[in-house]
Length: 128
Image (tube, rainbow, N blue to C red; front, side, top):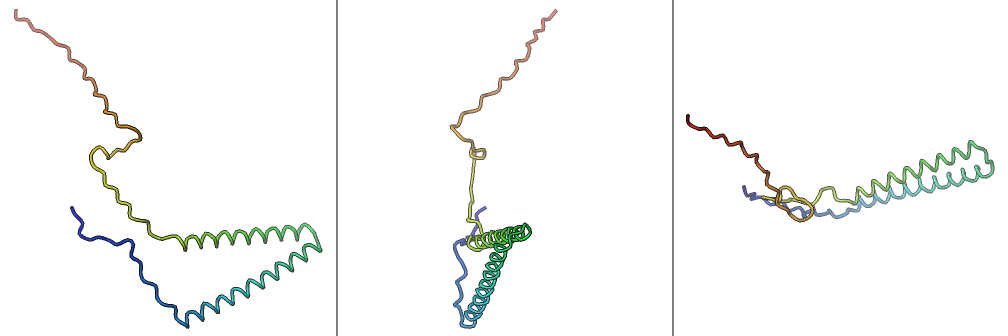
């Protein structure tokens, strides 16, 4: 059966122009995120100074736990960023096989050996 409908896998929806309102929202959220990041950096530096001035096992353990959580979150963000950049659809990969190609094997093709059939015992009848 021949398919008459051909799908164009390379087509993508054209992007819409960025409006001023949308750009203002993006800038505001960027400023808010940068402010939160600076605040977190200051808190981390303050915690580092406190831990350095009072090195007890609990503060060291808390610092190590905080570092572990931050690194785990950064790994999650990297994974999410990779997912955002990779295409969500797989490229078309139609493979048509016919005849002997149904069972592809590595190496050269060797004809299969013919099975030998058992020869039936021949019985001779003599008339009396």
